[in-house]
Length: 473
Ligand code: B12
Ligand code: SF4
Image (cartoon, rainbow, N blue to C red; front, side):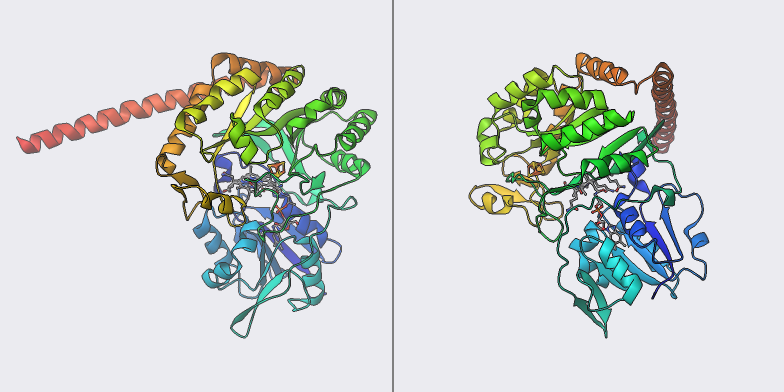
């Protein structure tokens, strides 16, 4: 073997401030893929690690694998990679690294090679052969130039391989806005790819613009992996978990047979409502939160997006969905092409009518491979913000769209909606009296701290204005 001791780094710190409490399963997949080839492999997640990173760089470590997934904390990620001792080979992978290969080689001279796309097989080959022109999906430095090997073929999801959670050094607890619960959450994959083709969606593309053929694991392997998971709540990172409801039914049957008691969060499509028989089993088996793309409250938009349903169908589907106490978290897009400000605000009325529990709102984006880019050419007055890919128009700027987004959230979360949500979480036995007490105490303390801070800053500013007044005198 060319390498014997690998250190895998998840180089972000800030994600915990929002909802980023989830384990980095992409990196864990990569680490687990080389476990049988190397003497040691460690995974360090800088969001949770208490020791300084230098503590992990002993002389034995010869391979450092870094997961670069987002553009967030760019400077920090750069400093982490740049400070890796010179005697180690540095390989970077992940979605952001795949999309910005040349930029990263230029910006971070310490990078030896970048794996584009899936990492498992590529890293196995690196451990065996070293950096080489034979490894598909690899880009590397050679005589002052960057060599890009051909893309690696996109593989279907594997049934017989999943991350070894024993490599983990941390407990991943659900946390939000500074509050950390005692509920562990994990991530896993039941399928990869999506068989649908919604026009606005880049979810289905990898950062190379390739669409993965939809594939599912055997239900047995899904349940076998769940058995290795300690967490009470499991999120499926699948683009869509419910593309084949017969498969979902088989997973539920096995979960029920095995008596596994966990809660599951999944990306789903509204068409699940066509199978109330499976929904019944899903409820029994522990499925709890459905992340559903509704996208718009208007037929003209749903049609142009090729979403596959209209508002009448959505209403019909929700009539069935409301019979079950799943938590429905629905995604809507703010600033769909051709929608007026008033039409965007219709999201509030429409979601209340449907019985949506929580909202996920995002401003329309046209990223690198989005089919929207072509579509936008046909509409006057629409533009794409270069840095973010956000779509705006002459009569609604990105700032206005973001304000509308905040206003729609504020309009949606009424007392009855919040109470229904609490009721559902209680029914799923996730919200106990003890947990509710902790949340209330957290909110009360936070409010009190804010009030004290405000008082202090008022005093400070009064003092300041007094002294400046004195100067005037
Ligand atoms: C879970 C998830 C999250 C979690 C991440 C948890 C975590 N710590 O990883 C949270 C909730 C934090 C999150 C947040 C965001 N997310 Co997100 N998320 C996902 C989701 C659903 C699953 C990711 C996943 O685990 N995939 C499965 C694993 C196995 O795949 P993977 O991570 O890509 O890893 C493989 C390769 O990338 C590679 N690899 C990864 N690391 C390494 C390292 C090395 C060394 C090597 C060699 C290879 C390698 O090998 C892995 C195995 O094949 C995806 C959608 C999806 N289905 O993929 C969106 C997705 C990744 N998210 C996306 C986005 C846009 C975001 C946000 C920017 C949303 C927002 N507006 O705030 C934020 C960004 C957070 C930040 N820090 O700034 C986009 C990314 C689009 C893009 N072009 O990059 C996706 C694809 C969804 C989408 N299309 O909208 N997200
Ligand atoms: S929006 Fe969802 S269902 Fe539509 S193509 Fe994207 S991942 Fe598939």
